[in-house]
Amino acid sequence: MFLDRDGTLNVKAPEGAYVTCPEDVVLLPGAAAALRRLNLAGIPALLVTNQRCIGRGLLTDAGYAAVAARLRDLLATAGARLDGEYVCPHEGGCACRKPLPGMLHRAAADRRGLRLHRCVLVGDAESDVAAAHAARAAAIRLGTPGTSTAAEAMVADLASAVDLVLDPLREL
Image (tube, rainbow, N blue to C red; front, side, top):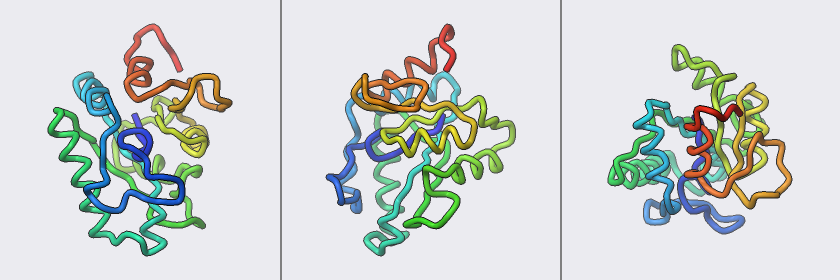
């Protein structure tokens, strides 16, 4: 399972702002427990996150590393972990920035046996959905049910997305 970061695992910064310091990392309710369920089920959880704030000079690589470490620490406290992290630091003009599938393709190249057509990307934006579909993966979008989306499913939160993925009778 691929996971977006801001708005999926942690609280998203206000429009036009970015999570740029470790103290700003606040997990969404139930996100760590949902991730822990994936971990216990043996499903790799890979972060795929656009971080244009790095390309804009609002966050250094070291600053990003501190934010990422805080996220990992908060998850670990709840018994959860990410199995890999892929970051696009660019503002645009690259193949890795969602809605393009570059981070997903890089993950598939890095991880033997990972088949994108058997993967799901969970995110809170339509660009996450587009990246999943461009990589031939399924998508679950987080948001208000009834919102227009090209995703295979729209659910309220990560826990609900994990419910769908772990349901043996459900096929996305």
